[in-house]
Structure formats: C-alpha cells, structure tokens
Length: 151
Image (cartoon, rainbow, N blue to C red; front, side, top):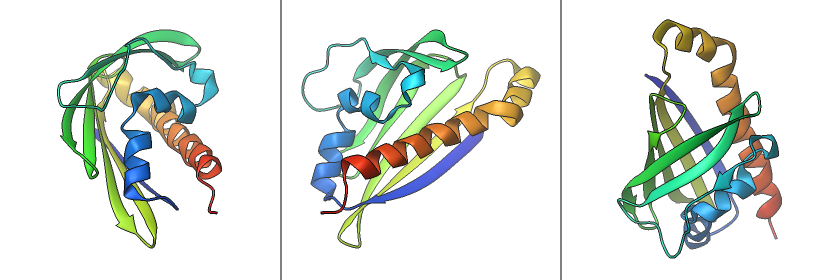
C-alpha cells in the first residue's frame, strides 16, 4: 500500500473551502485538462455518506477509464473520505481535511492507494504513477491559488 500526503493553505474560510471541495462538480475545475475528467452522475445537494459518483477520466496515455467512488465518511466542515469502488487502482482512499490556520484554511490530502498487477504495478509506480499523482496535486494547488487569490 502506498501513501501520498500534501497540504495547501488558502486565504478562505473553512465554510468557503467546504462548500467548494464537498461539491464533486468542482473537481473538474482542479483536474489537469489532459485527463478529460467528466462526472457522469447527476449531482444535487451536499455530499453524504454512501453517495456514489461515477466519472470518466483519462489518467494515462489518453485512455478513458470508468471510475466510481463512494463518499464513505463525512464530518461537515472538517473532513470527508472517498474511496474507489471501480477504477484503475486496486485500492484508492482519499481523505480531505480542513483546519483553520493563519486566517485561512489548511487543506490536507491523504491518499492511500494500491496498484493492480503486483510486480508490474510496483514498477509502474516507481517509474510514473507516483509522479503522475504528484503532478495532479501540483496542478490542483496552482489552480486553487488562481481561484482563491488573496484579496
């Protein structure tokens, strides 16, 4: 099992952060365009435990993959966790945490993941999967900085 952690501070309130990040509709705004991220599920209202969301995404080499996640834990204004039910990973669990910090919000992302194909998955992780995940979160940070510039 692999783990990826990152933190990012934004000059917004926890309330603003929660509204933005707990809406799956906004995920496409902070995903690299080459991944061609599309939400297939009709979404209305707040996220909730048990919510299932279907996507199409092109994670590698422009190949479209179906991805289905479930929101499995929610504590409004504090954190939520989504986990992959169907998709390119053997295991994918992503916890988003929000903490007040220095007049803004510190967002923490912790991803626990496992790749399929045993030995081949380990080689793929070493050569490009880890870098791909880092690049996605770096893109996200830059996009968020532009969206939520300090006023």
